[in-house]
Image (cartoon, rainbow, N blue to C red):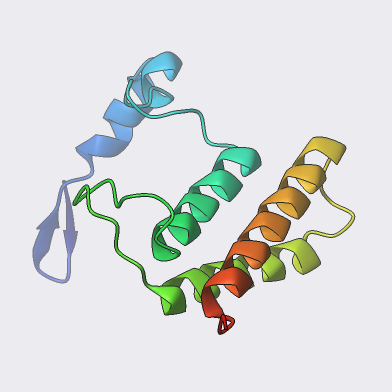
Length: 115
């Protein structure tokens, strides 16, 4: 242990990290999917669908319409589209386009006054 401004600092974790097997450092919880851009997009889309009241909130199992939240997420996906232009593979780009198209269409249907 080293002295640092009169406080004892435990530095033993550094040695443990060096000797820990590489496979243990990379283990992730078994119930979580492998993170990738498509999963990220679909998780944002899911939040927007919840805000649109199209699917129940998985936490409450209730349909809870929150159009402000839905608009925020749709706009966020639009920003991602602009900022990632030219950096996505074909599948990612098509997924983002499809998600935005469907969410925009549903948002407009929810917000435009019907006669």
